[in-house]
Length: 307
Image (tube, rainbow, N blue to C red; front, side, top):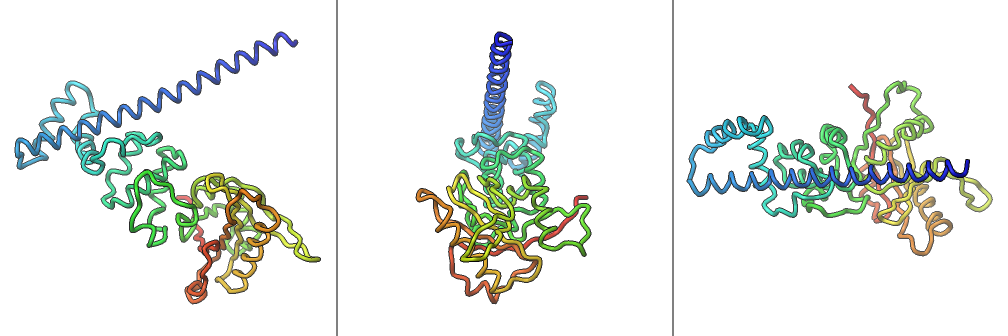
């Protein structure tokens, strides 16, 4: 039995090493493909400039006919136009070779005209290792549009931002199978826990779930934090409170109490300051105007059903 276990362990290691190496090769293939297409785009732009081609579309159409005959549909008119855009949007080679962005990712991003918006989705793919399907869902959900207006003004490519700045408003919660009349705070929390992976993506990068209904003792009374997360990248706790009604000053006071408790009783010396997020049905700008604390964030939620 011992001898068999030894061989099973050895075989598992070989398989796991093969999986890792295959992933590395696939990533390298995608990077090489993106680099090749960037260079093709560069050559198209150079040709159009040097030959002073007035009708660029006609030129690309003629080129696509020749290349498609030789190399297949991957070089049709539509793709050559995308390659041209790839170079025009990202004239520096290094900016188009991030680790997780493939050509298929890029084809979803290139139709976006707003530079900040393009940069945001590229950063999102890299930070969260999004699949093409997940990227498409983020674009359809208007993730960029739901960011704070100050953040959207200048998004730098391949730069990490702290999670508080990237928290969307509203957060989208799928309520498939939930009766709205029954949606109290307990049910709302259940919705979030059932789709925790999607909810973490809504919050940003680096979040790990710690617990729900986290019991704390304040004086002689016990209180319960709705949701507690730890952000690995930022090395800090995040306290999240859920409210099914409009924002009140009392809600902010409760959130601040919980944040201070985590800072004083739970976080280590090497952890950064705890952040509190209050998710309510509707914001109150009159209250938010007087909230001047960097470690507290107010956002709302929107209920949706999958089509």
